[in-house]
Length: 162
Image 1 (cartoon, rainbow, N blue to C red):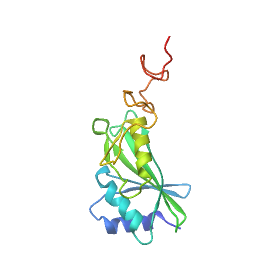
Image 2 (cartoon, rainbow, N blue to C red; image 1 turned 90 degrees about the vertical axis):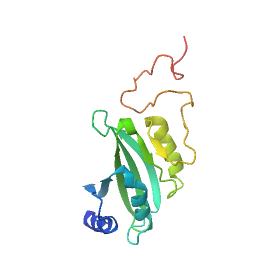
Image 3 (tube, helix red, strand yellow; image 1 turned 120 degrees about the vertical axis):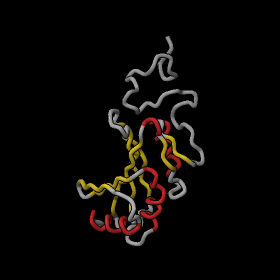
Image 4 (spheres, rainbow, N blue to C red; image 1 turned 180 degrees about the vertical axis):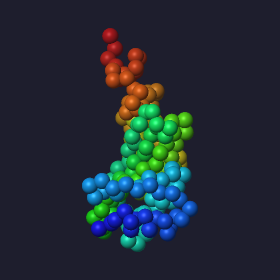
C-alpha cells in the first residue's frame, strides 16, 4: 500500500527543488504543488517505477470564493498496479485562471479539462481543443462558480423567455 512517506520520498528524489504539501484522509493521499509543475509531476507520477498512476479518473475544480488562490484544480489519479488512488491539487488565482494541460500525459484529460473550463472558466494552456462542452459558446458565464446566481443572470440563454 502506498504511504504518504513513500510518496514524499519519491517526489522529493525526483523534484528536490519543489515544495509539496501532503494530507491523508481515509487512506487516500492528497498532494498539493505549484501549478507551474503540474505536467512534469504528473508525467513522473505516471511513469515512475513504484508509482505508475496510469489512469486519470477525473479533473475538476473547487471554487473557494474568498481565498487568494480562489480555485483549486483537482486531479484524481489511480494506479492499476498498486490499486491506489491519489489526488493532486494545484491552486489557481482568479486573475490568472490558467493551468497547463495534462492531455499530453493522459488523453482522457481532454474531456475533463474542457468540462472544467466550461463550468469554472479555468483555461488549460496547450489544450488541443479547448471549447465549451455543455454551455453554448456565446454563453458569458461559468455556472459552477460560487458567484453565479442560482436563478442565472437576466438574459442568459438558460432562462426561459417571457
